Image (cartoon, rainbow, N blue to C red; front, side):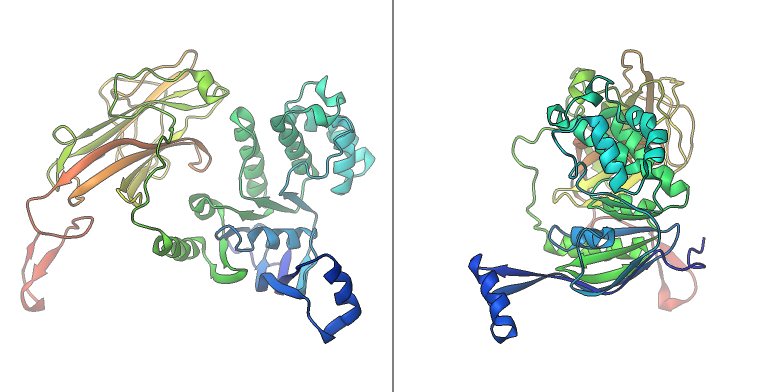
Length: 450
């Protein structure tokens, strides 16, 4: 789809933001008196020479390390910061999911803050009256609490109310910093659905995130910021690839999980372990109940000869669409080597469970494996992913499991190192994977296939 048939709704030209850092507060006054005759401050550029055009219906992803200038750019686009240099034009109502609840008056009730914040966002009294019940309903707050001062709210209640207000204004441009969803449990999924509904309606979205997969999945264009300057700009796959290469160059090969790291779910090395109680993981959501990894002979795979099977058992509470499963193979340095996603391969997880059946990236159907364990009152699902005659070369590898929504974007659960396996080889080929190949004598004629 071409989005560039209209005028851009966001246009930034040579945009920059500079801060002046003074050693002492009195130096600010001295600087005013001295003017340009003497400089008493240190100049810090948070953003410099940014040019971008965002058209109606586009989703712009912004990636970069902490301190790269991402949040500064979003605040400039929202109008909460003035630019030092350049020009910025926006066309339409802007709603920002930045510091949710930052404008709340703690002494005011939830009701009063709804009217206060919604009016700041551009709604008049009549519009707020019309949307008041919807805002309260979406926030999930009890009618008793909505009349209490927000200083008595928990952090979760505070964020839920702020999100409900921010998304009620029906913006033309939605600005999101760091997360597609907020809160936890059921509200996290509902907030994700709300944001994705804006995308489906053709709203313009500016999305800042460290989740490169989400940027690539939902964005039409992306920019990579580093030290306040644009390093790459264009299609999300290209920009994400360049940024990922940069991160890989910076990363140490000796990176290991922190000692004592706790992960959700059950590791394959302990198949007899009981499933964790549902209340340990918050409100009822789709959850991984068991992971089982079958790798060659007792965890040792002969490269190109043995299969790798990963069975994931899932429970899905009523009211949720069947989730999707992602399986990632990582090496000892925690670098992603290969992956498979049920949503990518068009595989649907169904509640009809038949023991022993398999689901792979090539064949979809109702399936289950040894990993399925039903949760109370929830639909039991399972799927088995098979990599036949695994072509990885020698080394130790781990399995990461992702349980995602039906779109394959929102993550319900991430289990790190759910299982491990070793690969051996009987030849001297080097690298990570053995790819199918053949040789031709002299460059012509018949060849030898390997």
